[in-house]
Image (cartoon, rainbow, N blue to C red; front, side, top):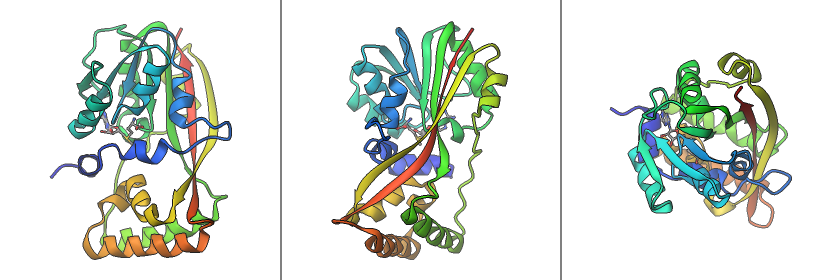
Length: 257
Ligand SMILES: C[S@@+](CC[C@H](N)C(=O)[O-])C[C@H]1O[C@@H](n2cnc3c(N)ncnc32)[C@H](O)[C@@H]1O
């Protein structure tokens, strides 16, 4: 059977964009826009591009872009969004590009999911020109200051435990220390920020299913229980028919020597 991440992306292609596309920082930018603003001039690779939402933002900024993802369903969405853009099916640990193909490699909400970060970084370094920019956005944990998040997550995890559904992914961290080791001599910067959005109460159960691999893969009675929990807890926190969801992310840039 396909691994959980593949099953999720086959079932919900475009989910990441649906979840993160409407979430904004205090300055009004989404995490996609923040990342695209760090694209250097020239040719950019959107690594683990999903449905191409980041690549689209890079195109809007006048850069030439290519995308790569291992999931065919996500790439089908990306092809609809970005006709004429080269989109490749492949693995971030074994990139199908010659050395120095890109001036920048960007990746949104994917690097923490891919095993063997050292190997991914070595491939990024190989396909990026000297002086090029590597930039990423990765998850940085729950927003513990948001009472809705802190109410709903433990309750949902109880359902996951009952369903015995565990989603194992490597949680590769891509810290500043990791970056310094993986990209020797690079100028490294990091920014941690919150992204937040109003989610209509009537779609909060669906939203949680799209946001978290485990919740999305719950089936049958477990799914019904999870949806009911989302609706009940959501209703307690809703203001004017919507709940405020927020999460923490970490953005980084590494300008190669
Ligand atoms: C959370 S989604 C993010 C998608 C997109 N970057 C976005 O933010 O909208 C993670 C993506 O990483 C892709 N992925 C996971 N492992 C991969 C690998 N080893 N090589 C390439 N892509 C991978 C998945 O197929 C999925 O599209």
